[in-house]
Image (cartoon, rainbow, N blue to C red; front, top):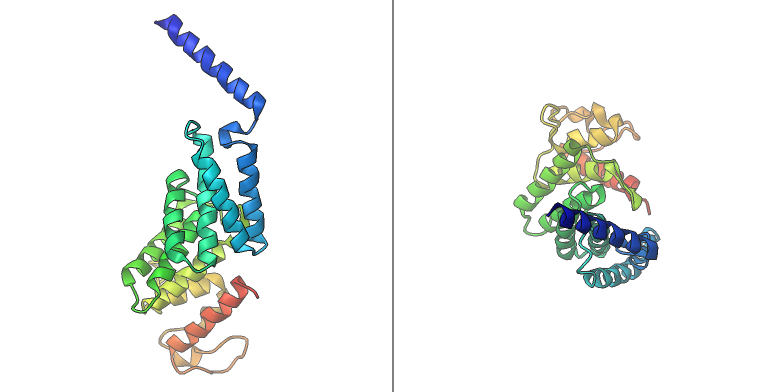
Length: 244
């Protein structure tokens, strides 16, 4: 029995070496698949989301054919493909399709920053409709808190413009959407709390002091309610996070 076991190990090792000799990246899905995935991300970074989506779908078809290559290493490739499909659909305003692909991607790579942010954004977009679905908004908030507690990197390796500021902005927008304008430092909740996390220059704002309801760039009271000033700040922060 021991001899048979050793022979099996030897044959497995020889098989692995032969695969690597043919294609060193075979355990990640092969060079052709990885080139397709990288091409998809290149188009995504260039803002060509339709072309990027087409490429990722082609990569998915190629990956689906590799039924005999279900290794832990190839899981990262599968995760990247579904994350790419998710982000393209999110940019193309198909939040429901995006959400489903981000969920699949998380099944392969749970602690992917880009996938987690995409899933959070998908839940926010789906919840922030008319009528609003507070349960989906709350799910977005839960994902946001989980991202901060998980120790993930603070930017997406496939597109560094997607970073921790996206999460902070989504948190501010989510709390604003559900009507929580507060700055609860102890529990890290409220739209104002997350606004200050993004830009500490807004730390002068107070929910119970109307004289503080102004934009620091202007230096004078311009708004009649905390709701109004927070909405204007969120719009300003959006311009910073998503410059034209």
